[in-house]
Image 1 (tube, rainbow, N blue to C red):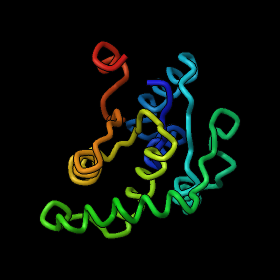
Image 2 (image 1 turned 90 degrees about the vertical axis):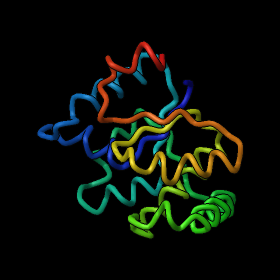
Image 3 (image 1 turned 120 degrees about the vertical axis):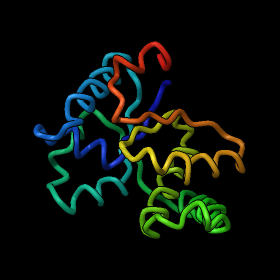
Image 4 (image 1 turned 45 degrees about the vertical axis):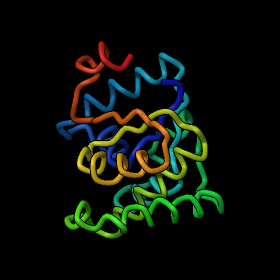
Length: 156
């Protein structure tokens, strides 16, 4: 893994010291920095984070900001089309979550980011994996709920 996109759920846990996944987020972030993994933060994540907290609290000095652009929009539309054609898999998902996940996945794909970290494991199987299968690319999906020490032997 040489690059990673942080999800909103990761950012929330990284900055919320009383969250049960705070230590996991800190451990992963420290690992990314120590191993010179390029850390990306989408403008979409910044917008989502800003609903509850000031985006200036995010670790902006340590990340590359990924603006959502025309090409990302085009790719996200293609990805969203794949998902809506498989309605049985996404019946329990909020339509806005699907749209935003497709946007993030488009940014990952267009920038050739190798990994994505989130606490929302449900989206792995129902949104990310179907798109990866149709489009034929691979992204390493990291589940924030699993401590770094448990992943190290398998992923790193």
